[in-house]
Image (cartoon, rainbow, N blue to C red; front, side, top):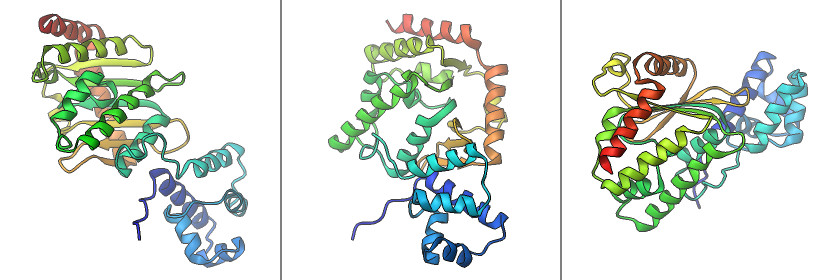
Length: 284
């Protein structure tokens, strides 16, 4: 028997929201399940994000819980509708990263900080292909091809009509990475400069001489996503065993640290673009 898919982030969040609404009304699971006409395990699965909530059942629950605000109801109904949608990335990446890509596609604002290489969202196709060919998937041509396609398609999120406001803070040491060869590096630099001209994209360089990120306790790259709907702000943090998605109060401290680096310690808009242009001239 095939293993069931891990519930998506939005399914889990919707489940937690339903649990909070029930507990705020001081209602027991068995009483709500009886009112809804389902078994207790079904309601538990709803609240754990393990089972999609039917629209009719969700409407009944919102009535029972006293959710009268039309905007709140619409947001929860829309979230339930999308809770188990995986999008174009299904089959290209693992379920956890697929979940993050969904959130990325729904974000109103992104803040990206990277220490090791150009962020996936702004990687030129030539650079992405070279990077993937040297990565852990290089031994598997099929997976490498899928990952490359996913990365190229992922970048389109910045070119949508309603694209998120996105800022990218790049550690200067990344500009010194030349192993991919002059042609590939030049393509990447030109690609970054082109994207930086878009009204929704900003790019700054954190000087290699700066220790500000170390003092702030930022030892790895991360991405903060502010969502369009009334959902929690999300953060994805790079770790040696893979990326971790978090939410809650800790996210705000990372966002504040990012803003401090961006405003007080980066080379600024013009200085950063000039630095990239200088590297491009040197590479060419």
